[in-house]
Amino acid sequence: SASDPATATAKKIVIKQVTVIGGGLMGSGIVQVAAATGHTVVLVDQTEEILKKSRKGIEDSLKRVAKKMFADKPEASSQFIEKTLKNITVSTDPASVVHSADLVVEAIVENLDVKNELFNRLDKFAPEHTIFASNTSSLPITQIANSTSRQDRFGGLHFFNPVPMMKLVEVIKTPMTSQKTFDSLMDFSKALGKTPVVCQDTPGFVVNRLLVPYMLEAVRLYEKGHASKEDIDVAMKLGAGYPMGPFELLDYVGLDTSKFIIDGWHKGDPDNPLFAPSPLLDKLVEEKKLGRKTGEGFYKYH
Ligand code: 3HC
Image (cartoon, rainbow, N blue to C red):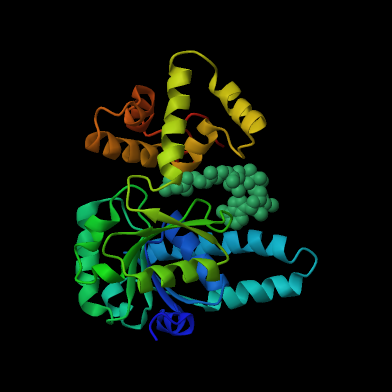
């Protein structure tokens, strides 16, 4: 019967072939982890140049992972790297590759119109069974899903930076996401060696909803002169056990990304003091001091 767990399992989609759109830090990380766990992955981005850079990033990160996994076995290590890279192909044309995908994961720019345009187009090229997922950290999954006619086969898969190291995946269910789709996304997350948690389609899901206001509050504390940023970082590392302090983490995530998230929430809920913009964060972003990636944010990097 339909309620028989064996039948229910059989009805889930076993995700083997994955298309990842977006070769930035998150997209590359997702590709790497999926390929390393035996999935066939196509990485898509706009130019060969970007794809080349993504591939280089994946190779570098794989080397770090392999070094840890196969400490004194250089042969096993290079075999693992080679096998993983073999699972990855690249393309600049998503419409021409999604025909073989069980899952499409989108990790492109955080712009609703751009995401909607992409998914609307891919909806026409992807097979019936293909599940679509967005790695957005701040936009409502429902609004992205609505650009397709497969809202039941649409969910959120939210990864964390650095993807190869962070064990969590937030699996986001919209009111339209089917149980079958949801189960398939949960299983896929586990197949990646990650721990999934269930999230509703609410701003920031769980992690960012707690983490971003916390980081912003640290900036406000510093702006008010209540403590130095160095001391706040030391305090949260040694007093709360965080691997990075809030300023180190802001620089790591990117100040532009953090500002984008808080600005979006502020727009939607202007009276919520947790979502209030930070003049200092705004100033640094305006000066193009975006964190590690530009060489300077709250701290300088050389
Ligand atoms: N790829 C592969 N391995 C990596 C890696 C990467 N990108 N980054 C770190 N590692 C591994 C390596 O094995 C490295 O050893 P190696 O330097 O010899 O290669 C080892 O981790 C240790 O790294 P580090 O010495 O550089 O530093 P740490 O011990 O502090 O670990 C960290 C780095 C795992 C990033 C840790 O600092 C951490 O967990 N920081 C917090 C990260 C966090 O909170 N992320 C979530 C951000 S929010 C988000 O992503 C949501 C989005 O929507 C905004």
